[in-house]
Amino acid sequence: METDPIITEINKAREKLGLSYRAMADAAQTSHSTLWGYLTGQKQPGLAVARRLCKAVGLELTVKARR
Image 1 (cartoon, rainbow, N blue to C red):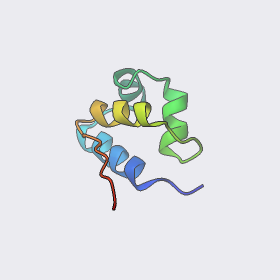
Image 2 (image 1 turned 45 degrees about the horizontal axis):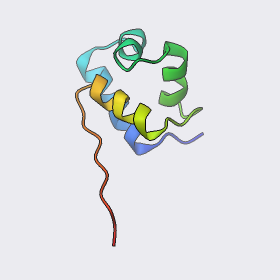
Image 3 (image 1 turned 90 degrees about the vertical axis):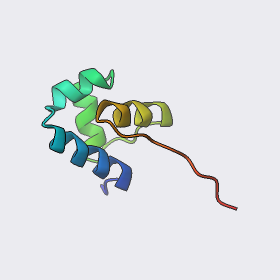
């Protein structure tokens, strides 16, 4: 499965911070196996989870309306 660009950026930030999968999962309030599913593209997080993933690695998820 193809990994979403947002997830790719989240994983880059995780690696830059030196966070383990387990530490990031704890910070994002999810299990490490679920986190692995998100990071490998096997699962897609909802908006609330995506925001928690971003927050766990110091990123901010914003939504911009197109017109």
